Length: 248
Picture 1 (cartoon, rainbow, N blue to C red):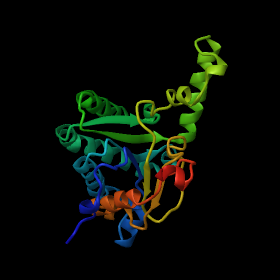
Picture 2 (picture 1 turned 120 degrees about the vertical axis):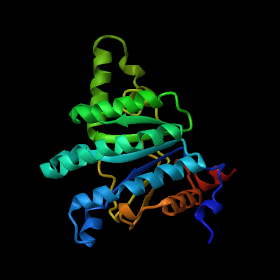
Picture 3 (picture 1 turned 30 degrees about the vertical axis):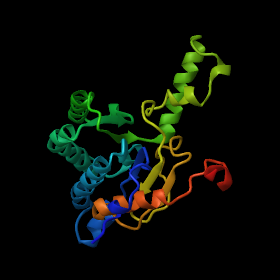
Picture 4 (picture 1 turned 45 degrees about the vertical axis):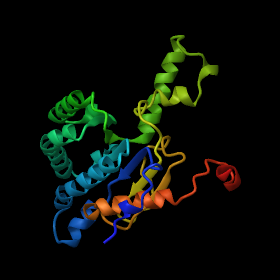
């Protein structure tokens, strides 16, 4: 049976894919289980996305792992998610390193438990020289918070005289975001049938192609990922230009 991978043009891949991994709780509910059961079974989908990216050479993959709003969930669920994150980092660290991936973390990580912060820092340290791809985890992340923090940083630079107001432009703004070392998003994928971006990378997705899938995140797999890339490659990206300008 032919795979969508066989149909891909490997010379025309998105440089940055971002995924809103949604639907764990609903998936668990369909099986008569608690929400945490869905979170635990989502790890295979995470591996599928990482492996598929690595397989075809997409340089950047960002996963919306835990939002700033997720702190408002029931305390027991938040604790379970933090424990699961810690366990997953421990189990997957060697594989991430062996794949040649470099780990990045974006978000307000000061709010994370100390053990998780230490594990993340350790994995970032040991993968910092890897060059086969970049795995970006958005943790305790909210795009509005990120933008406000960037405004504060720029305001401080203006106040101390290191930046003139007239020199503020898109490049300056981007250098003050969490994603200053990461290119804009080319393809945004959201699972679970919801059609919204949920405070995720609002600046970075300005010209991203967006695909909203009915599949719940634990059912997301390698073939689903390749189908998304295939759909991306069959979309005309104009960036404000006309079709005629793009095809000339």
